[in-house]
Length: 173
Length: 404
Image (tube, rainbow over all chains, first blue to last red; front, side, top):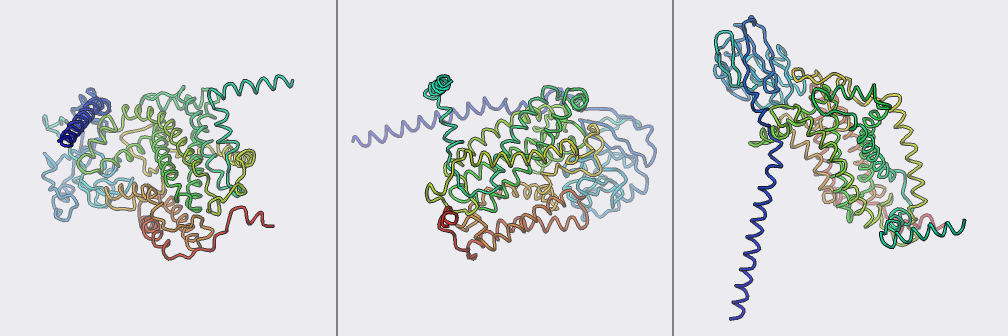
């Protein structure tokens, strides 16, 4: 009788210990979250999200680099050759298969985030084995659609969200 | 005269009775029994402590003149170099002090590898040492970002992007580290804070490192335990003098570099202000990261490279158990001795290919060297302990000396 009472008492006591321990963990995590989250992008950084770019001066073959969210953005007016080359690739051979059509709104203008998907360097344009971009840091080659063809980068150059406001203006972000 | 001396002693005793600082120092730095046969490779622990102190003193001074803002950081460094009294000297000491801290610590680590200083009962002492190395790497990396030159900016970009290789949460982690969508002002200011904070954490871990060291005492070139008081000598004056002589030698080399080749270990590109639109054609980290950088680039896969690079350091934590031999010192391990030198050469080769562009023959060399790095720890050392026949160990440390 007394032993049952004792073990019951013990399990009640340990339940209280565990429950208060669990509450303690919840409380400490709740108090700790602001201390961690303060390092995430602040409101003013988040607010600098959209820009307008004038592309009227961009003739065929030329490209333009603008700064968006602290990163370079490439806008390239592609030539017919470059468009054909980008379209003719057998996409099953690509490390990150994407059709050229999926990557452009108007095939003439390629809009890319100019950040190598390997470790974030800025690739140089019109260089590399595939006449697109070449990243000097660790040797990644991109084609005329900004797709990764050779080297350590895992993905194609990213496409930012954008729309053509009119023929001469792109709204990015 | 005699009575004033007596008075001083009285005051010291009065304090020591209430706060035992004097007897603590006497116990751990004066009378502390040390193996009688330590050679100069045992000098590098105190040298590392010295350079840590130099870095903290010069760093605190530099922080009085530096501005952690993207618009002012580069100019404030030039201000230190040109306008602040002796600023050039203090900055060059701080820049090269970081390199010498790493040189000294790497020699200290290879000393431990040669003489088996990581083996029982010094496993936690070894762990604390690796922890210090990791903290040093983080501190040095963030310090290199502060001048906000081209190498600062792109080094920071590449290293923080390593975390983007983590599946699913990688991008959120990099944004959290940056405080934005790229390396920018929030990144610079938090790196400055952490660069200031971490050295004091290193001091804390160094204290633990010394506590662990003094628990079982120093290892020694023979790698055998001390049998009695005849195997030890007091730390002071024997090793204080030896360490000071070694320090004078190290300082001669150090100041030769500070005065005559202060930028030899740096990169000219870092005297160009940071430009987020243009990556320098050839970016390399500081020399002390090159072996690990070579391992990162040797693997043709992004995540795989990052994992290999971090594993290269974390494998050191397992070393006390991977090395299955009970004999500590390589002096009595004929095969391990050869493997040690091959491993040292392998590490130097990795450092060399890390400084070269990632193309052609350099990629092949870096892959072979990376493979050997892990082969050494994961296969050769565990097997060697089973097959190697060691030379006979001496009976005691004192015997070869005292027998005559």
